[in-house]
Image (cartoon, rainbow, N blue to C red; front, top):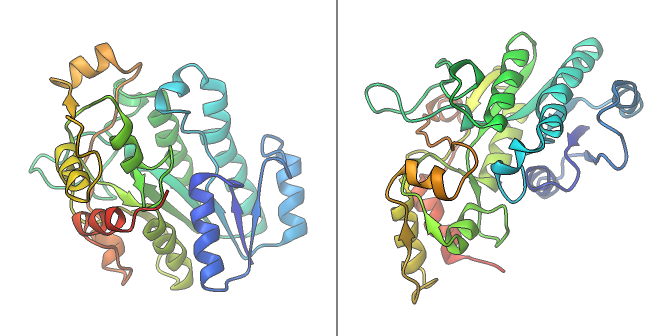
Length: 289
């Protein structure tokens, strides 16, 4: 049995959807059922359920966006760091392998040669560099904790999207933001992300870090062009910030991570991910309210 932490959250729901589609036994555990903040409650739940594998898709990203984490730092630490520490200790003691949903937001830019960051690269958008959002800082510290933990998959998600309209969907955000920042990013199709992560366990590939982003990268302007081509927002003239500095001065409370990531490692393990432009096009052509 696979246990998913994260309740009905955006990412946890994608794991539930995939596991249901392939008929794998699983249970979704929400904070309403078990108070994750209390170690004894979490430990008791795992002892009772005895899962063969635990997926941690719980966390706090901020609503409506990461700016909210700047004013709710205690909640951010509890959800993104403290829970990871407790869960890693419990799973180690009980010898239960686990997978943790991390984030590509601990990187900024690209490697010196312009290529995407690989799993061996150290984060450059974190508290140690004093240049990050509070959210990115906590996600990076959680990775440091898991670096010392055995039998763990660490899956890096980056700007999730799919074909279903949602406030959490990158495509929905692009369609609704009044003004955009044109940057290049690697992004993750949410359902492919969940499927790829689960297949890490199904195929028993080696534990470790994996960038689970669709191959390639895309700019904001490219995404807008695809949205218009698909028949959306045809009468709208999209406005852009002049640069990141103007974006931070007029629209944001904290810096954003824009980065290119290399997903070759997970692809070389026999797990497929669709090229990013192709995946975006499919989602827009199959858009659902």
